[in-house]
Each structure stands twice: as C-alpha cells, then as structure tokens.
Picture (cartoon, rainbow, N blue to C red):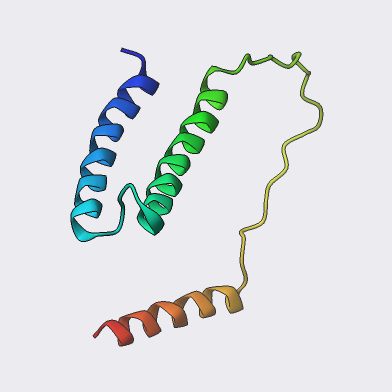
Length: 99
C-alpha cells in the first residue's frame, strides 16, 4: 500500500474519532459556529494532505554532478565559554523550577 494512502487512512480514522469526541463536547457540529469549527478542522486536514501530496508525488530533477574543489578544512568547535555557561545556567534553572 502506498505510504501516503496508509498514513491518511490511519490518520483519517484517528481524526474522525477526534471529531466524534469534539462533537460530544459541543465544539463541532453542522450549524452555526460549530459548523465553522468543523470546516476549519477539515480544511486544515485537507490543506496539509494537499501539501504533502505535492511534495511526495511532484516530479523531481537531479542536479548535474560537480567535482569538489578545495582542501580539507577543520572547523572550530562551536561556542565559547560564555555560550556553555548560559546553557548550563538554563539547565540549572529548569532543574530548580522543576524541583
């Protein structure tokens, strides 16, 4: 089975179950503001499905091969002592808030 169809078959089932729960909670329906909510949800799902279909099934082109030029360059280690200090302080702050 095509992965796209499989994904939207299973995802569609989960989406419908979510819509049923949303309808029971009074968030979506077929009249008034509830219909607008339903249209936005379905429209969003269809928009994402369309974008994914275009990206997955669009014809692709391959670029011509280009010979690599240049030597080996060694990159510097990213970050400075200040950068690592800020990351460590954030980590300690998250641990302090969590405890």
